[in-house]
Length: 598
Image 1 (tube, rainbow, N blue to C red):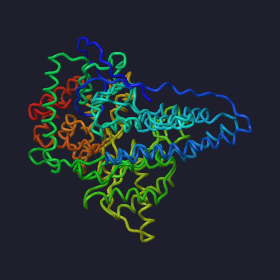
Image 2 (cartoon, one colour):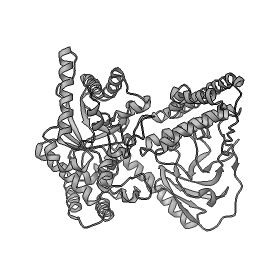
Image 3 (cartoon, rainbow, N blue to C red):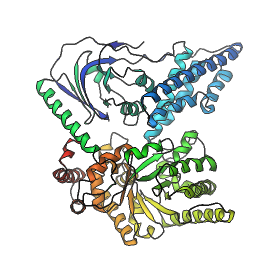
Image 4 (cartoon, rainbow, N blue to C red):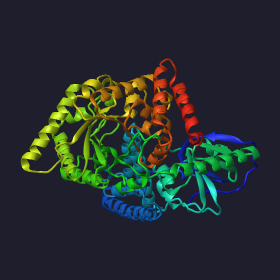
């Protein structure tokens, strides 16, 4: 049973605690402290050879119980939410029979005579260390999933496998060091006003669940367990990432005003949700979705996505920890194509493995994998993998409008080589009488500065460009955005980044091909407006962010956006922050509601 403390504490002066705005919304109420369970006690006592068989059976029984618990939690979650977040526990359920995890556990028991708890924990540490070193938030979360799963399994081996279930007697704001997905699901819905945690990130599964369940949350609040006592009054702002501790009358009044404006802003966002993307004077700007195989494609119409601008195929590999067969790939791509209305495009990016996206057991072979054998470089060195993927994409193209997108292009030789492979696969299918779209469009991602600088040459070999702002900014500024020591230098409005985008757009215009942006910067309404002013034709982003960005863009005249972009480009000697502020101020004059987008 988890310790939950409700006792009131004498209040002191108001203090603002800051963290990460993880789940939008506002809450006010008393704090309840949700204490973490103590570190697992793992004894390394050795077995006798005669005990091995019984220990293996004990492990199997604990795995069976773990599977039942996880399936029960998953079913409960599916009753409460319908999005792809309901599948958050599927990975842990699969681990109960995953040979990649279980074989090392059994080997430690059989060969080294380790007890089951010790074997599970040592195996877990091996995997979590590898995942923790990765840069991709998705993969880091997989590492946390493994540890969360292992903790549950070890508790079951110890005879106490129930989730930490807190007994809340009144509505409250939960303050904790961290909360697992299972604990989030188990909390009583009618008693949880909001969540404040010391740990956590925007991509943690608990954060995703909080959003899906509509629970306002601020995570990464340093020392919140030391600052906040049971019963303290809290005002939680899940939009700005602030928690007001022991507010006074003035703070309460200001908070009430913010909540009122927020409700008005939400009404503003919902207006015209199903209308097509465009500026206020009718300049078309299609809004497309970034997806992967685990996304619920049936949810795309709810946000009025006008197509799929980025289908990340690498997550098929990562979810299976192997190359999917041609049939598995074809089925996944076809499902995405068929989920869209006829005529809407599905842009499928070929395999982008490497860097921080590696299959288990394949990392650590390069001193700098971000600058190594990744993406298009890997595929051209492994043409059979590329051809299997091309054939799968081509078959899927017979079911709807499909585009193929090449990642990490740096040279014209790479682009010509991958185009040649595509044509070879098309010839092969044609000779076999297999249907496909023989007019399928080919695109190059502009995510390396070199590609932007030779965009005029690349444009002659493709039908469209898609700018990957995440890597373009990272490679241009030599900044790892996940490194807190330098993340402040990750600046989308840096003059160098804007110039590279401008060069790309101008090269595309000269050749008469469109330019999309599929990086995260497109989901920021301020930067999205700047991109459109620069001449970008389409924006692709996480599906849930489409309504907000579209609503803002539909309020803005295209000519004004062009002027804002022209001004931004002219400010070569200014800082990225000053350029961003100038853009924001001009846009607020046109859309006052942006004042309440923080």
